[in-house]
Amino acid sequence: MPGEENRVEDALFRMPAEVELKGLSVPVTVDLELIKKEVHQNPKFQKLIAELRELEDRQNNKYSLQNDVLKYKDRLVVSKTSSLISSILHTYHNSVVGGHSRFLRTYKRISSDLYWEGTKTDIKKHCEECLVCQRNKSLALSPAGLLVPLEIPQAIWNDISMDFVEGLPKTNGFEVILVVVDRLSKYGHFLPLKHPFTAKVVAELFIREVVRLHGFPLSIVSDRDKVFLSHFWQELFRLSGTKLNKSTTYHPQTHGQTEVVNRGVETYLRCFCNEKPKEWVKWLPWTEYCITPRFNEPLRCPLFRLFPAGNRRP
Image 1 (cartoon, rainbow, N blue to C red):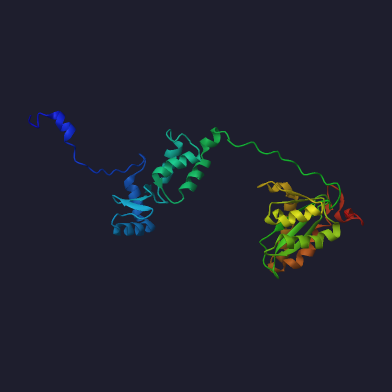
Image 2: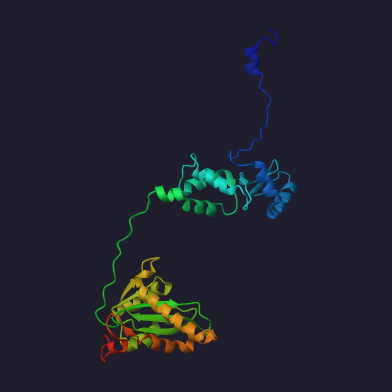
């Protein structure tokens, strides 16, 4: 039977020649020519493209050049300053297809096709600032933990709070102020420290300048500084019978009164050390003197009257 008439045999035995197809899949909203133009005008990518063209297979560990289109791990490279980024974000997030998905889903969709420097940051910012999402989505967060208020102090220097004021000009090695405040009377001690300091150094200073005057406190409120979390610090005050209370993470209001005192110290030093900032150590005793004798509004008396002899805890 002539070959032309034997159609069944042709279909079964005469295989078509292999054809190599090269396609580039991109989102509908992406203007490929504009992206190529912006990438080729970018000085950083110009150098990279020139290097890739010199390679035989036109690719290195991460980047490749396909049909004069730059790709990063098989994803289309977009210039960071591209005018199309806003429309890309809108398509993948705000459109009917995007469905106002949350950050992770939007990021997975975009990053599977496209790449630009700061992709993740830009997508996260866009999702967080989306007004439609803010108005219509409920928060999928775990319930907040129970906030327990601090116990009301019953005697002066039984319950104190501690914090550090940092970032001061270096003077004779001192760069930090240790602020110790009595939670009942608001009386404070401001002690200079050299940086770097350890829990042992802070403990020695605390015992020398505070414990010798007022005895060991019943409780200390502090933030989660590594000094206050160290084993030495914990063991020292466990042996002295002092309870250590840590502020809630990212919630400085826990010991807000110490923050208020810190601002007072900083304001006083700015007023008197503005022209000679490296003399702040000299003014620390005057800072304590000036802040301490102020009239205590809740207790309706000067702070000095709250410290009769013999009030120290044994």
